[in-house]
Length: 127
Image: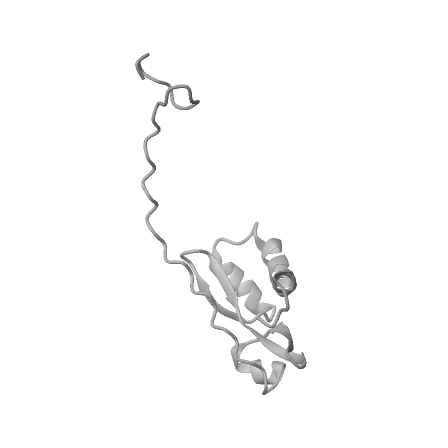
């Protein structure tokens, strides 16, 4: 990521996502689905890379511009604009993290009565 620390990495992610999240927050009462968010972000010039219905994610593309040797500033940009926005020497952007495949939830075990422990009501004194 080019960030010297985890704190700076998360600060960078928050800075990159602040404006798109603000747009999403403004339309949340009117949005009927993920596509409404994609449309709003695209109309305002945000580089929507992909959207995944399975986990309701909108992925934006970003590239890193080297501002000093080995110091990068990440900027939202369409993949086709990476060279123009971040320069020809910009390192390739990492692939977006693929969404986690949806899994069937693990079965929840039935609560059991355990002597001298708070829990489900026991049916008999022997329990």
